[in-house]
Image (tube, rainbow, N blue to C red):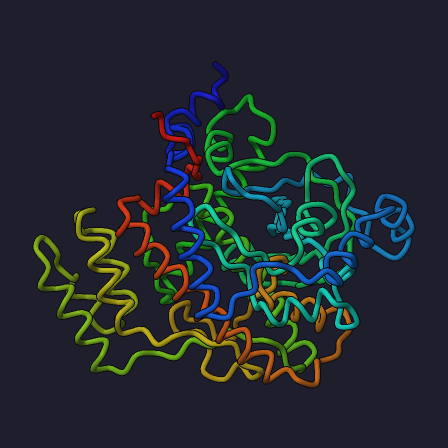
Amino acid sequence: MTSDAQAEAGTAEGQGPVEISPELAERLEDKREKLFEKFEIRDKFPQAVMTEAEKRTEGIQQEIQDEAEERKDLRDMTTWTTDPIDAQDFDDAISVEERDDEYVLWVHIADVTHYVNPETNMWEEAVKRGNTVYLPSYTIHMLPPMLAETVCSLVPNEDRLAHTVEMHLDKEHLSYETIDIYKSIIQSDERLTYAQAEERIDDEDAPLHQECKLAFDLADQMHEQRKEDGSLVLNPRRDRAHTLIEESMLKANKAVTHELMWGRGVEAMYRVHPQPTPDEWSKALREIQDLDGVSIPGSTWDDPRKAVNATLEESPRRQLDKIQWAVMKVMPRARYMSDPFGGHHALNFEIYGHFTSPIRRLSDLINHWIVYSNDVPEDLVALCDRASDKQADAEACEREYKQYLEEVGLDPNAVNNRGIEVVEEDD
């Protein structure tokens, strides 16, 4: 048994799929269809969209070579992806270097708008869908999988078109010295799962060990700095691989929206998260303070976000969910807006937006188009509303489907991690 196989056997995924009867499978399908109707979620792609996607996947290697002269060639740079074990497409990769007086972090995002632009049926369909919807063991994609999982997926050892965010970071404060966003060609060296990335950080003899360790050390510093600056961290006990990716993506998203706002002064699809009222924050903190075994450090009461961070780190694990829920209840919903006014309260960023997931979020796809064309879609305000509403629909659909799984005796987490297998019952 390889070490990978052993690691996998110890995880939920290694236990094999959750087995259900044909009758239950039918009930689940029926429930999904009712939910799709209720939330206006489009499960099947129209034929015109599928035909277009199929055409865009033909002759791709030649097309990539033809693009080479117009783009920055980063194929020799060490680059890798890190995703869940069951990921179907890989839309972001990173590269990192430490220099005498700076860190350089490259976040490479699949160049989806090279294939999907406002002139295409796929774009029109993406606007209708708004995002990919993830139900346990069932995914409704925003883009046709035949495109998302092939030319838009940064698979290892294949040339791919990317949109790269190159960030030069000051070593002391990790502030941006320069931000450069450009079209590139990359070739990922390896596709790591989170578990593998975790191992690489420790294993000095493993490929990509130095890179993974450096990327994590940088991410860890960025994470600590973010907390110090007043960013709310509701999940303090994430493993190192998740921290590495999450912090790198936050840094890239922030860099792009700063560049759009300050560098170019253009409207974009910004992510705005209003703050709860002081009364709502007080209510949440009192609820947290009343939990058994939980105490909010006195020095942190002035800033509720710092108070929650400090409390989560020191509280018993059994109370984490209750602390998180107390905060979530008072948090207003974040929305997409064409004006960043108000900023992102939870992250404590003045300006923030999404760029790193154009395969699964309309907001990122549109921001890619704005960065590339330096032009804003005329209906940007309507698109912001659409993306916000469809995200709310997706979350409500997921919540109701998980609830139904529990009602029929299934564990949504087990179904999500292990998948489902329909098994005929013996006579």
